[in-house]
Image 1 (cartoon, rainbow, N blue to C red):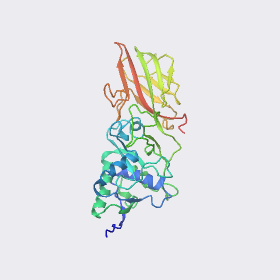
Image 2 (image 1 turned 180 degrees about the vertical axis):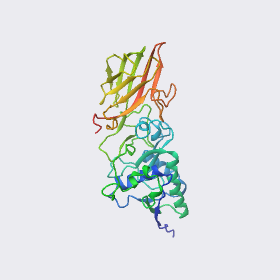
Image 3 (image 1 turned 30 degrees about the horizontal axis):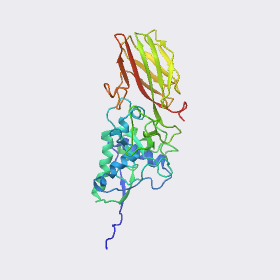
Image 4 (image 1 turned 90 degrees about the vertical axis):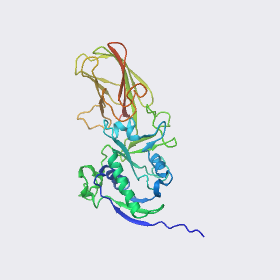
Length: 353
Protein backbone atom coordinates (compact mmCIF):
# COMPACT_ATOMS: atom_id res chain seq x y z
CA UNK A 1 0.00 0.00 0.00
CA UNK A 2 1.27 3.47 -0.89
CA UNK A 3 1.64 5.84 2.04
CA UNK A 4 1.93 9.54 1.38
CA UNK A 5 5.09 11.04 2.80
CA UNK A 6 4.39 13.18 5.86
CA UNK A 7 5.39 16.85 5.48
CA UNK A 8 8.52 17.85 7.39
CA UNK A 9 8.93 20.89 9.56
CA UNK A 10 12.21 22.42 8.39
CA UNK A 11 12.39 24.81 11.30
CA UNK A 12 13.13 28.53 11.02
CA UNK A 13 15.34 30.11 8.40
CA UNK A 14 17.10 33.19 9.78
CA UNK A 15 17.69 35.32 6.70
CA UNK A 16 20.85 37.37 6.21
CA UNK A 17 19.48 40.31 4.25
CA UNK A 18 22.77 41.70 2.94
CA UNK A 19 22.29 42.27 -0.78
CA UNK A 20 18.59 41.36 -0.48
CA UNK A 21 17.39 44.43 1.38
CA UNK A 22 14.46 45.46 -0.80
CA UNK A 23 13.11 41.90 -0.98
CA UNK A 24 13.47 41.48 2.79
CA UNK A 25 11.71 44.79 3.32
CA UNK A 26 8.82 43.60 1.15
CA UNK A 27 8.52 40.36 3.12
CA UNK A 28 8.61 42.24 6.43
CA UNK A 29 5.83 44.55 5.24
CA UNK A 30 3.62 41.53 4.51
CA UNK A 31 4.46 39.69 7.73
CA UNK A 32 4.86 42.50 10.25
CA UNK A 33 2.45 45.14 8.90
CA UNK A 34 -0.29 43.69 6.71
CA UNK A 35 -0.66 40.47 8.70
CA UNK A 36 0.79 41.32 12.08
CA UNK A 37 -2.05 39.53 13.91
CA UNK A 38 -1.59 36.28 11.98
CA UNK A 39 0.76 33.92 13.82
CA UNK A 40 1.41 31.99 10.60
CA UNK A 41 2.21 34.99 8.41
CA UNK A 42 5.88 33.95 8.36
CA UNK A 43 5.16 30.31 7.47
CA UNK A 44 5.86 28.98 3.95
CA UNK A 45 4.84 25.60 2.51
CA UNK A 46 7.09 24.46 -0.35
CA UNK A 47 5.63 23.76 -3.81
CA UNK A 48 8.40 21.27 -4.55
CA UNK A 49 11.68 21.29 -6.52
CA UNK A 50 12.18 22.83 -9.97
CA UNK A 51 9.10 25.03 -9.77
CA UNK A 52 6.83 21.96 -9.63
CA UNK A 53 5.90 21.96 -13.32
CA UNK A 54 5.20 25.66 -13.57
CA UNK A 55 3.44 26.21 -10.26
CA UNK A 56 5.94 28.95 -9.45
CA UNK A 57 5.07 30.74 -12.70
CA UNK A 58 1.36 30.40 -11.94
CA UNK A 59 1.95 31.92 -8.51
CA UNK A 60 3.65 34.94 -10.08
CA UNK A 61 0.59 35.50 -12.26
CA UNK A 62 -1.79 35.07 -9.31
CA UNK A 63 0.22 37.56 -7.25
CA UNK A 64 0.07 40.15 -10.02
CA UNK A 65 3.84 40.38 -10.42
CA UNK A 66 3.69 39.16 -14.01
CA UNK A 67 1.13 39.15 -16.81
CA UNK A 68 1.02 37.22 -20.07
CA UNK A 69 -1.48 39.39 -21.94
CA UNK A 70 -1.22 40.95 -24.41
CA UNK A 71 2.46 40.05 -23.94
CA UNK A 72 4.64 38.69 -21.15
CA UNK A 73 5.65 41.55 -18.85
CA UNK A 74 6.40 42.53 -15.27
CA UNK A 75 4.06 45.02 -13.61
CA UNK A 76 7.23 46.93 -12.66
CA UNK A 77 8.00 47.40 -16.35
CA UNK A 78 4.51 48.49 -17.39
CA UNK A 79 3.00 52.00 -17.44
CA UNK A 80 1.42 53.47 -15.34
CA UNK A 81 2.66 51.26 -12.51
CA UNK A 82 6.36 51.52 -13.31
CA UNK A 83 5.90 55.30 -13.17
CA UNK A 84 4.19 55.40 -9.78
CA UNK A 85 5.30 52.43 -7.66
CA UNK A 86 9.04 52.89 -8.20
CA UNK A 87 11.67 55.26 -9.59
CA UNK A 88 9.98 56.49 -12.76
CA UNK A 89 13.28 56.64 -14.66
CA UNK A 90 14.61 53.24 -13.62
CA UNK A 91 15.27 50.58 -16.24
CA UNK A 92 16.44 47.77 -13.94
CA UNK A 93 13.31 47.19 -11.86
CA UNK A 94 11.69 43.80 -11.35
CA UNK A 95 8.70 42.74 -9.28
CA UNK A 96 9.13 40.87 -6.02
CA UNK A 97 6.19 39.14 -4.39
CA UNK A 98 5.68 37.88 -0.85
CA UNK A 99 4.72 35.17 -0.18
CA UNK A 100 7.26 34.07 -2.79
CA UNK A 101 6.47 31.96 -5.85
CA UNK A 102 8.12 28.89 -4.27
CA UNK A 103 5.39 28.78 -1.59
CA UNK A 104 2.01 27.11 -2.06
CA UNK A 105 -0.71 29.71 -2.57
CA UNK A 106 -4.40 29.87 -3.36
CA UNK A 107 -5.55 31.43 -6.64
CA UNK A 108 -6.11 35.19 -6.58
CA UNK A 109 -9.32 36.31 -4.92
CA UNK A 110 -10.45 39.96 -4.77
CA UNK A 111 -11.76 39.42 -1.24
CA UNK A 112 -8.76 39.88 1.10
CA UNK A 113 -10.56 37.87 3.78
CA UNK A 114 -10.57 34.87 1.44
CA UNK A 115 -7.05 35.33 0.12
CA UNK A 116 -4.87 38.21 1.38
CA UNK A 117 -3.06 39.88 -1.52
CA UNK A 118 0.64 39.28 -2.00
CA UNK A 119 2.77 42.24 -1.07
CA UNK A 120 4.47 43.52 -4.23
CA UNK A 121 7.47 45.80 -4.53
CA UNK A 122 9.57 46.94 -7.48
CA UNK A 123 13.33 46.67 -6.98
CA UNK A 124 16.61 46.05 -8.78
CA UNK A 125 16.67 42.57 -10.25
CA UNK A 126 19.83 41.70 -8.27
CA UNK A 127 18.11 42.22 -4.90
CA UNK A 128 15.05 40.27 -6.00
CA UNK A 129 17.12 37.29 -7.13
CA UNK A 130 19.36 37.43 -4.07
CA UNK A 131 16.62 36.56 -1.58
CA UNK A 132 15.20 33.94 -3.94
CA UNK A 133 18.61 32.27 -4.11
CA UNK A 134 18.95 32.24 -0.31
CA UNK A 135 15.53 30.64 0.13
CA UNK A 136 16.34 28.12 -2.58
CA UNK A 137 19.66 27.20 -0.97
CA UNK A 138 17.95 26.66 2.37
CA UNK A 139 15.43 24.30 0.80
CA UNK A 140 18.06 22.41 -1.19
CA UNK A 141 20.36 21.98 1.80
CA UNK A 142 17.45 20.50 3.74
CA UNK A 143 16.42 18.15 0.92
CA UNK A 144 12.99 19.77 0.89
CA UNK A 145 10.08 18.15 -0.93
CA UNK A 146 6.55 19.30 -1.69
CA UNK A 147 4.47 20.09 1.41
CA UNK A 148 7.52 20.57 3.63
CA UNK A 149 7.20 23.82 5.54
CA UNK A 150 9.33 26.33 7.40
CA UNK A 151 9.22 29.78 8.95
CA UNK A 152 11.30 32.81 8.06
CA UNK A 153 12.93 35.22 10.50
CA UNK A 154 14.07 38.53 9.02
CA UNK A 155 14.86 40.35 12.27
CA UNK A 156 17.53 38.31 14.08
CA UNK A 157 20.28 39.02 11.52
CA UNK A 158 18.93 42.32 10.21
CA UNK A 159 21.93 44.27 11.54
CA UNK A 160 24.02 42.92 8.64
CA UNK A 161 21.79 44.74 6.13
CA UNK A 162 21.77 48.34 4.95
CA UNK A 163 19.47 49.77 7.63
CA UNK A 164 18.18 52.52 5.35
CA UNK A 165 16.54 49.92 3.08
CA UNK A 166 14.84 47.60 5.60
CA UNK A 167 12.42 49.92 7.39
CA UNK A 168 9.73 47.28 7.89
CA UNK A 169 12.19 44.80 9.41
CA UNK A 170 13.27 47.24 12.14
CA UNK A 171 11.55 48.13 15.41
CA UNK A 172 11.35 51.92 15.25
CA UNK A 173 7.84 52.50 16.57
CA UNK A 174 6.06 52.24 19.92
CA UNK A 175 9.21 52.56 21.95
CA UNK A 176 11.24 50.28 19.70
CA UNK A 177 8.80 47.40 19.95
CA UNK A 178 7.17 47.50 16.52
CA UNK A 179 8.00 48.46 12.93
CA UNK A 180 6.97 51.78 11.45
CA UNK A 181 4.36 50.52 8.98
CA UNK A 182 3.80 53.88 7.28
CA UNK A 183 3.44 53.32 3.53
CA UNK A 184 6.68 54.40 1.83
CA UNK A 185 5.06 54.69 -1.60
CA UNK A 186 6.45 51.39 -2.92
CA UNK A 187 4.28 48.67 -1.35
CA UNK A 188 1.37 47.68 -3.58
CA UNK A 189 -0.84 44.74 -4.42
CA UNK A 190 -3.21 43.26 -6.97
CA UNK A 191 -6.92 43.99 -6.36
CA UNK A 192 -8.50 42.83 -9.63
CA UNK A 193 -7.59 40.07 -12.10
CA UNK A 194 -10.22 38.92 -14.57
CA UNK A 195 -8.02 37.38 -17.30
CA UNK A 196 -6.11 34.14 -16.85
CA UNK A 197 -2.40 34.90 -16.36
CA UNK A 198 -3.25 38.60 -16.04
CA UNK A 199 -3.39 41.51 -18.46
CA UNK A 200 -1.94 45.04 -18.69
CA UNK A 201 -2.81 46.79 -21.94
CA UNK A 202 -1.01 49.68 -23.57
CA UNK A 203 -2.60 52.13 -23.24
CA UNK A 204 -3.76 50.82 -19.89
CA UNK A 205 -7.49 50.09 -20.12
CA UNK A 206 -9.15 50.04 -16.73
CA UNK A 207 -12.55 50.67 -18.25
CA UNK A 208 -13.31 47.27 -19.79
CA UNK A 209 -12.68 45.31 -16.57
CA UNK A 210 -10.05 43.02 -18.09
CA UNK A 211 -6.79 44.73 -17.15
CA UNK A 212 -5.24 43.96 -13.77
CA UNK A 213 -5.80 46.62 -11.13
CA UNK A 214 -3.34 47.55 -8.40
CA UNK A 215 -3.33 49.82 -5.36
CA UNK A 216 -1.12 50.85 -2.47
CA UNK A 217 -1.47 48.35 0.39
CA UNK A 218 -2.18 49.36 3.96
CA UNK A 219 -3.72 52.71 2.96
CA UNK A 220 -7.20 54.08 2.16
CA UNK A 221 -6.11 54.96 -1.38
CA UNK A 222 -7.82 53.24 -4.28
CA UNK A 223 -6.45 51.91 -7.56
CA UNK A 224 -3.88 53.69 -9.70
CA UNK A 225 -5.11 54.40 -13.22
CA UNK A 226 -3.79 56.21 -16.27
CA UNK A 227 -4.61 59.69 -17.57
CA UNK A 228 -3.32 61.51 -20.63
CA UNK A 229 -2.94 64.94 -22.17
CA UNK A 230 -2.76 65.74 -25.88
CA UNK A 231 -2.36 69.11 -27.58
CA UNK A 232 -0.87 70.93 -30.55
CA UNK A 233 2.05 73.29 -30.10
CA UNK A 234 1.94 76.02 -32.71
CA UNK A 235 5.20 77.96 -32.68
CA UNK A 236 6.92 78.96 -29.48
CA UNK A 237 3.97 79.92 -27.27
CA UNK A 238 0.57 78.84 -28.63
CA UNK A 239 -1.05 75.70 -27.18
CA UNK A 240 -4.14 74.57 -29.07
CA UNK A 241 -6.65 71.68 -29.24
CA UNK A 242 -5.98 70.51 -25.68
CA UNK A 243 -7.65 67.25 -24.61
CA UNK A 244 -7.37 65.67 -21.15
CA UNK A 245 -8.43 62.03 -20.87
CA UNK A 246 -9.24 60.22 -17.62
CA UNK A 247 -9.40 56.52 -16.63
CA UNK A 248 -12.96 56.21 -17.93
CA UNK A 249 -11.76 57.30 -21.37
CA UNK A 250 -13.77 60.50 -20.96
CA UNK A 251 -12.30 63.48 -22.77
CA UNK A 252 -12.15 66.98 -21.32
CA UNK A 253 -11.54 69.80 -23.79
CA UNK A 254 -9.52 72.81 -22.67
CA UNK A 255 -9.57 76.26 -24.25
CA UNK A 256 -6.47 77.30 -26.19
CA UNK A 257 -3.88 79.23 -24.21
CA UNK A 258 -0.47 80.85 -24.56
CA UNK A 259 2.80 80.47 -22.68
CA UNK A 260 4.23 83.86 -23.57
CA UNK A 261 7.61 83.56 -21.87
CA UNK A 262 10.14 80.85 -21.06
CA UNK A 263 9.35 79.66 -17.54
CA UNK A 264 5.62 80.46 -17.77
CA UNK A 265 3.17 77.85 -16.46
CA UNK A 266 -0.50 77.10 -17.02
CA UNK A 267 -2.85 74.96 -14.94
CA UNK A 268 -5.09 72.75 -17.06
CA UNK A 269 -8.29 71.68 -15.32
CA UNK A 270 -10.70 68.83 -16.06
CA UNK A 271 -9.10 65.90 -14.26
CA UNK A 272 -9.51 65.36 -10.49
CA UNK A 273 -6.40 67.48 -9.98
CA UNK A 274 -4.76 70.28 -11.93
CA UNK A 275 -2.16 69.42 -14.55
CA UNK A 276 0.47 72.14 -14.76
CA UNK A 277 2.53 72.64 -17.91
CA UNK A 278 5.71 74.74 -18.02
CA UNK A 279 7.47 76.17 -21.04
CA UNK A 280 11.25 75.64 -20.94
CA UNK A 281 12.25 77.16 -24.28
CA UNK A 282 11.29 77.92 -27.85
CA UNK A 283 9.72 75.51 -30.33
CA UNK A 284 11.51 72.18 -30.23
CA UNK A 285 12.30 72.35 -26.51
CA UNK A 286 10.70 70.12 -23.90
CA UNK A 287 7.73 70.89 -21.68
CA UNK A 288 7.69 70.13 -17.96
CA UNK A 289 4.55 68.71 -16.33
CA UNK A 290 3.30 68.48 -12.76
CA UNK A 291 0.09 66.61 -11.97
CA UNK A 292 -1.57 67.53 -8.65
CA UNK A 293 0.94 70.25 -7.76
CA UNK A 294 1.10 70.87 -4.03
CA UNK A 295 2.98 73.14 -1.65
CA UNK A 296 5.19 71.79 -0.24
CA UNK A 297 6.04 69.21 -2.88
CA UNK A 298 5.73 65.63 -1.70
CA UNK A 299 2.62 66.09 0.44
CA UNK A 300 0.08 64.73 -2.05
CA UNK A 301 0.11 61.06 -3.03
CA UNK A 302 -1.35 62.04 -6.41
CA UNK A 303 1.71 64.11 -7.34
CA UNK A 304 3.61 63.16 -10.46
CA UNK A 305 6.25 65.20 -12.27
CA UNK A 306 7.85 64.54 -15.64
CA UNK A 307 8.97 66.21 -18.84
CA UNK A 308 8.44 65.40 -22.49
CA UNK A 309 11.98 64.02 -22.92
CA UNK A 310 11.73 61.46 -20.11
CA UNK A 311 11.92 57.73 -20.65
CA UNK A 312 11.03 54.97 -18.20
CA UNK A 313 10.36 51.24 -18.20
CA UNK A 314 7.03 50.67 -19.89
CA UNK A 315 5.05 50.98 -23.08
CA UNK A 316 4.11 54.59 -23.75
CA UNK A 317 2.19 56.48 -26.44
CA UNK A 318 5.04 55.95 -28.91
CA UNK A 319 4.80 52.16 -28.69
CA UNK A 320 3.84 51.65 -32.30
CA UNK A 321 5.56 54.69 -33.71
CA UNK A 322 8.91 55.10 -32.02
CA UNK A 323 10.46 54.63 -28.60
CA UNK A 324 8.04 52.67 -26.41
CA UNK A 325 9.73 53.89 -23.22
CA UNK A 326 8.92 57.58 -23.65
CA UNK A 327 6.31 59.18 -21.41
CA UNK A 328 5.35 61.48 -24.30
CA UNK A 329 5.02 61.06 -28.04
CA UNK A 330 5.75 64.08 -30.24
CA UNK A 331 4.49 64.00 -33.81
CA UNK A 332 5.73 66.71 -36.21
CA UNK A 333 3.00 68.59 -38.05
CA UNK A 334 4.89 71.02 -40.22
CA UNK A 335 8.05 73.01 -39.68
CA UNK A 336 6.80 74.96 -36.67
CA UNK A 337 4.00 72.80 -35.29
CA UNK A 338 3.68 69.43 -33.57
CA UNK A 339 1.26 67.28 -31.59
CA UNK A 340 2.31 66.04 -28.16
CA UNK A 341 0.65 63.23 -26.16
CA UNK A 342 1.71 62.14 -22.68
CA UNK A 343 0.50 59.38 -20.33
CA UNK A 344 0.80 59.54 -16.56
CA UNK A 345 -0.59 57.81 -13.41
CA UNK A 346 -3.64 59.21 -11.66
CA UNK A 347 -6.27 58.18 -9.12
CA UNK A 348 -9.97 57.61 -9.61
CA UNK A 349 -11.19 60.24 -7.15
CA UNK A 350 -9.99 63.74 -6.46
CA UNK A 351 -8.89 62.79 -2.95
CA UNK A 352 -7.50 59.42 -3.99
CA UNK A 353 -9.92 57.58 -1.73
